[in-house]
Length: 54
Image: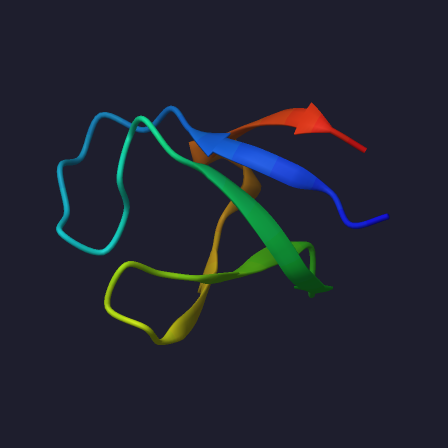
């Protein structure tokens, strides 16, 4: 089962929907790789997300 997270950062971006739950594709150097709303995967610092399911 993949970890699922929700964005809790204060920065508004078209790449991340604050109401959506995202699946973490992988963890690289302690950052989360997530498929964004732009259909591209990016690395994000974990402090911008709340874990909703492990």
